[in-house]
Image (cartoon, rainbow, N blue to C red):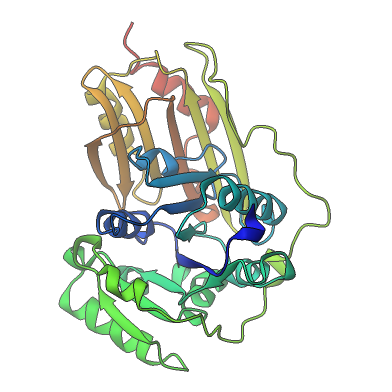
Length: 341
């Protein structure tokens, strides 16, 4: 039972869309002490849920995905139930929570420090990922959640170092240095790698005074879970489609039966042609095996995947980029053309 657990360390890895949170967590998992069991709770803005499919199945790391909203508002009641279940069933030595890139961490911290989890979990230093290139984008810098994710952070991991210029890195250090109180550390995560010691040596989080914004207040009526959590895949050749919109962003998610097989070259070519403003994440059964596809800032990467449950795709774009984002029917039709007969 959860009551048998005592002060399980909980680490929150937050950061804006596409800032490298999942890659950073992968690097931490690679360094996990052999005598520890970890639980990872991944929240995504999109309705389908991709990031949990990006983790390799293993006995000492349990991954739970919560798609379809923000942990502090739309999914607050679901998050509490999921974490209680995760702690009870898995009895982890450590928990890592990755909120949505549009999620505000203030409400999450409040929940973890509520009476329900008092003495059960110990919230450690909050780590926020920052892609230095985003400071060149006024739309991102002016976004309330982006700024609050940095304000609430105890420590900052500068990601995408290999893709940033020396000037962008210097500007990022200066931007963080302007925050008050000073962050405990700022680390340049080369190729998304963060030393595990920075996590293991962290203290209980000293949360900076940030109120949960109105847009992230808990919903008065809990949302339906229909369409957000999946046990049975859709029928072959008939993809399931889910759409969503909030906080100035829109998403389209598609999910296919695992027997549906895609032409990898055709799939990659179509996704590469989408506007660079559109964020793309997916895992697919292809003629070359199962592959992860990840596209940010117009660059598409393709890597092997151990996921076998289904093929799924999520695309996310800011409302100002909606003219460049295909509608759901167009997307389904285009991807149907990349299926092998």
